[in-house]
Length: 103
Length: 272
Image (cartoon, rainbow over the protein chains, first blue to last red):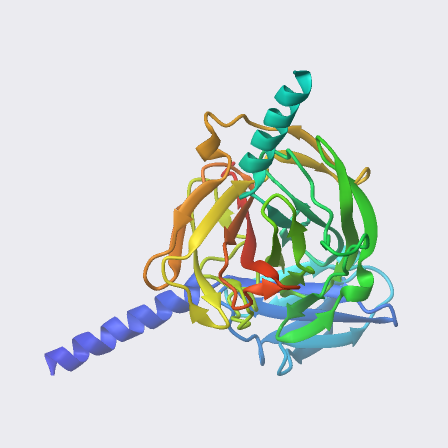
């Protein structure tokens, strides 16, 4: 029983360490057709499919979506200043200002 | 008498440079913060000493240089042909000029952009052989690893085990030399540091950074192990080239001996 408990705890510790060792990554570009594509990922190369994506403007959420099967999201470029947000959990959130997103 | 001295000097220069040819596939920065259009230069040279630049695709039976056989990039598993992006240029080295290429590439998407350049075999008159260096270089956008370690089963290939764009000064690079996907035991590998400023505006080499204490430091010869694997410590920031000699399966071209080599370039960064 003790052995099973130790193995379970060790596995959980390893798993959690693994999860926090990865850095969340996002890169966005202007498609030149009035839309923006943002790509998400992690430093270990794992997929960002299903990870939450938000488009924010003046503190308001314009769009809440999830990264698709290719770890991407495409949206219509909003007028004015905005932020693209890749939210992979606490300590794993990436913000990119719209001003930094170019063709 | 002067002619004799000149002839001896020239033959010494030629012999010292004969084993240090490197196909360069250069871009200033291999680890990009975000997507960008990058400049590329494709030059057949000697990256440390720059004592002679070679005409890419030079043939023994024709005045015309042969065109590049293949040039493409792979990002997230998708291959894009880049042959039509190549523009011929004249490259100015420290001692001569030679036929080379320039190109641009839009590294838009996140992840690794794995470039492969397969030039036409080059006729090396000094040895009466042809040399073809199948060259690999990786540019990464935004830090996400995607394609850098993809094995392409090229005729001659160095498969990296360490990301070629993410190496600190003083750490190491490890790769496996392969020919048609099979490891090449005890492969002979030459290592050179790109010891020059590269002037993209003038398509020219600039001044050198350091002087070698002795000739064996110009082109460093190492060997892979029985599994074709090698590791090399990298003591200085900048670009380093690794060339596995004769790793490819093609041994003859136009009736002459062919050395089909595998080249990979890695970029080293200082911790500062």
